Image (cartoon, rainbow, N blue to C red; front, side, top):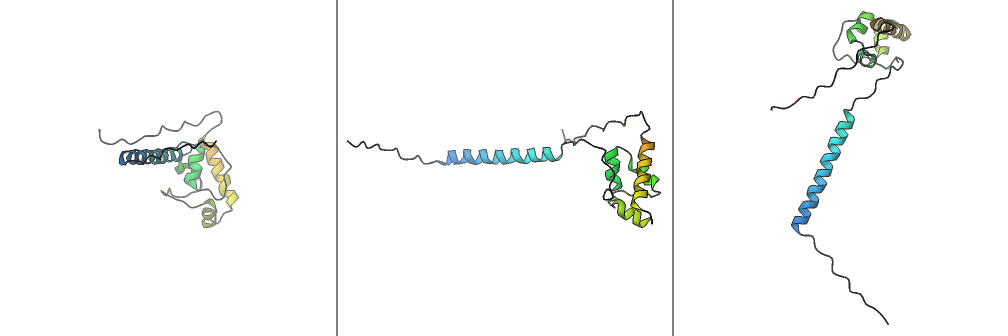
Length: 132
């Protein structure tokens, strides 16, 4: 005996269902975009890593929570906004060794944070708001 089972025909998706599916996909894309932006702008823990020749003065200042002007003074340089020169270039321009530049920066950092004094915490991030 052979049993034949007739399968129902698949339903066709009407425009309302397509619109719902499209809206769902668009909302997922928006959620992923915002999640990626939040991850990219999330604060990262700052670790006092050793000063390396590839680092810039602003990077070192942020890493060690010291004003960049203090580090520029230690190297007898004018404070240049958006200065992205690595320490190797600064040392070459001053006819110094990279190790002497690093030593001067480490001494300035020690003087900026005396022993027993904890560095101030980072200021809270200010989120700009649109018109109310």
